[in-house]
Structure formats: structure tokens, C-alpha cells
Length: 475
Image (tube, rainbow, N blue to C red; front, side, top):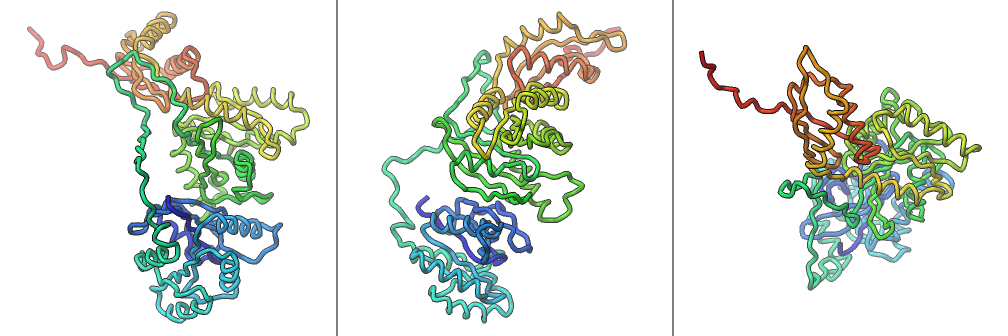
């Protein structure tokens, strides 16, 4: 990206709508409620022939430093300092407010280029607000409609004029970089059936952090980054959008997603919270490994178990993190109790890795990252067909499938059809009659014999073709 642009303005002027318009996706939550955006969210923008990084920010308000609004303001000011150019968005329909003038003065003092954007200019009666924007002293306002996409070419021209042609259109490098397309479905080429590909520890790893409200998700990510990148505080439910951040761990790029806290469905009534939860679910489906944050002082609430169950059903690799370990008085006794409860309450994720941590002090974070990588290796695991069939022969000899209606079930052949998560196909007679208990026996055997703890394992059964089907019987 050639340059960075921050979208700033008071609450509810349409900053997130403009952000979504520029990135071409509905990444940021949009609602009529003022103050929906709280963290700063980056994205890759495309505006006609321009390509740049765009940062959506919280609406700036006058507030004390110790309040939630004050911490939101600090995040926005950090985005302004990081950006090369700011888009000051005002509401042409509503008109200027004293806060708009305060923001204009703040941006002018920083000495960086500013483009004044008069949003909602398509509305009836917006002319007065548009001409009033001249009084801010930031030059000619650009009339747009972020919701309907009007005025985007004028906005493009204003950005190029403010940033300069050289910054807007940098010369391409002599050596063009080659884009690497990573497989998302985990399927492998079947030409060499005995090949078990090595784990690629150079590719970026996508990790989602989920949990109940106020479990310490944003604090944990800030500790990883070593800076106050995400908004935190004692209030529950501060995070609303799923915010992605990138950092390096032992030379590997980690793309981590902070998400909104997930409460019980019956308690989620407001439309905005429903949007936040939906955004969290999308982040889980996009991630490879999901870290479920438990509050170590009140672990294994019903909602915690439901979150783990959802992650496993989605086929993600999961790691449990018992946060706020610095508040635990008897760590050894509590750890033994948590291990027992993990095995008992989460049978569907047998062997799932669990790590005690403290996002506040940094305790256990390196061990957590190692467990994340180890779990991702298992999630990507591929086993050769020859090994699987030798294993299948051994386990069916030791414990044969049961007879159903007097007829013995036969498991003939087994192969792995995909990874991420590991999925297998077994050719057998009468697959519909195979008891669930025997499926669990096979799943647990795979988990133990091929060292695949804590990840979802899928086994599909397929009836073998009958070579005599369709032939006429002789009389």
C-alpha cells in the first residue's frame, strides 16, 4: 500500500459506512446508534485507481482520559498520528456542531494533509450544511453519499491533490512480488498416496480470540503486541467489531482477531449486539485456530461450554486459555481441578490443550503460542492410506464391528479425504447401521494412535459398490 488514510469525525456522521464503501466489504458494523465503532480498524481500500490503507476510527468526543469515551479518543488520535492523511467527515444533513470545529482545529495543529468530506449530501436540505463546512478552514468540502456511493470520483481527486501524485501512485518495484495462494480447504493431491506433507511453518497463521464478555481478550492481544492497540477497560462488552492485528512470533506472521464477547443467546436482545455476535461467528469461521478465553476465577460457565462446542462443530482447531491466573490463590489445586473438569465437561474435544495465562502480567503467553502452533500442526495433519488401512485392520481385529440383525458389518477400506480438520472415509457394508458407539471407538482410536489430540475428527462412511447390481438373475 502506498499511503495510509484515517477516517475521523464526531459520532454518527457515517465514518464506518464510508469505510465499508472504500474496502468494498461490510467489515465494520453500521447502526443508527452513535458510537458503534470503538477500536480503530484497518482495511485495504480501492478508490477508482487508488490503492491505500484505510483506518476506521471511533467518533471523537470531549471526555476525560479515564472514561471509556476518553480511551476511545486516545485510540482515534493514535490512528491520526499513524496516518499520512485524514478524512474529516461531517454531516451535511445535520450541519456543523462545536465538536466538528474542535476536531478541525486538532487536525490543523498536527500539520498533516486533511480532506474535508461532507457526507449525506444527497439528503434534502443538505446544502446549508455543505456551505457551512467552508467555515472550518480546511478548504473546499467534498460532497459525497457514503451509503449510495455518490461523489467517489471527486473524493479520489481530492485525496490525490492532498497527498501528491508521487505518494498516490508510487513507481512499481523492478522485481514484482509473486502472490502466494494458500489452500483454504486443506485438500491434497492424491497422486502420491504415501506422501505425508510436512507442516509449513512459514505461512501466516490466523487465530481468533473468543470468549464471554470481560474475559480479557483485548488485554491479551495488547500484551502480545506490547502496546495498547485495542481498547480495554473494566466495562464488559467494550469490543464490538472483530478487529484483526498482525505481529511476528519467532519469525512467523500471526494474524490475530479480537472479537466481541459472546453472551447467552437469550440475553442478546439489542440489534447491535446481535450484529457483534454475528461478526464474531464470521471471525471463527475464517480463522484456523481459535483460542477460547476462560476467566480462571469463574471457569466453565454454561456459555463457555457452548462456545467450545460451537468452535468444534465448525471444525476449527481449539485451544483453551484460563486467563487472570494472577488472581488465583492456590494455582496447583485450581489447575488440577480445571484439568479434571476439562476432560469431564468437554468429551467432544478429548485431549484439547489448555494453558493458564495472565494477559495482565504476560504469564504463560509464550506457552500459549506454542500450543496454538502445535494444535495447528495436528489440524493440518495428513496420514497415508497405507498406514490407515493397516490401522483399520488392527482395530477391527481387536474389536470387530457388531452384528446388526444377524449380519456382521464389514469395514473394507479407509483413506483420508481432507485435512483442516482431518476427515476420513471408510468403505463399508450397510453404513447406516453402524452404531454411534463404534464410530466413537474409531474416532478415539485415531486420536490416540496417530497423536491427534484436541482437534475435530470427521469420519464418513460409504457403502461399497455392488458388482452384481443391475444384472438379471438367471432362472
